[in-house]
Image 1 (spheres, rainbow, N blue to C red):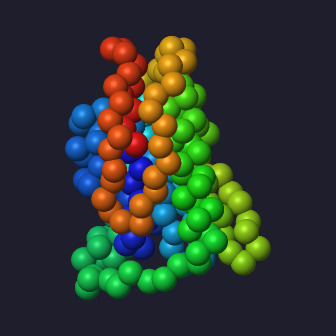
Image 2 (spheres, rainbow, N blue to C red):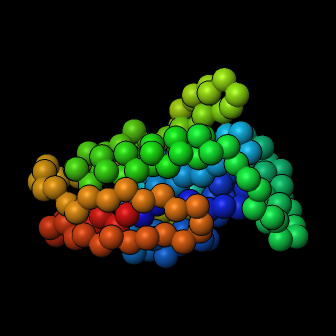
Length: 185
Ligand SMILES: [Zn+2]
């Protein structure tokens, strides 16, 4: 499943509570979005295996103890208008998100697992920032270590490429054999 919110705060600081249904159901999901001149792709989350929105939040809190307060203030603000974003940047992010999702559907673990790619205008600087599993996160990915959970079944699932500019997500439900991740994109 690709999570592509239009809300700036949700792109910059994905809400762990919003991802709870995905985490509890073990649904792999990928964050993507554009805020002003910055596009982000990742992290790709294998629940309980790789760093999630909660891990990202905890890591940021480690670096800046005021982070939770800042985010709470942003989220409690007035309804924000959806601002226009750069079309080519949005297209780039959409393409990358689709490529990472397809890599997963093809049985690979995309490089956004445990990382967040960011690209910034105007010079299109690229950074890959780690999103490490955090011991304080209830997802327990930190305890299980790095996941290499994907089987080598190599089965090609239904392919798709969708990245929608809304908080809604599309499911193209394809089930992998038992013991492997279900693929929802
Ligand atoms: Zn986590």
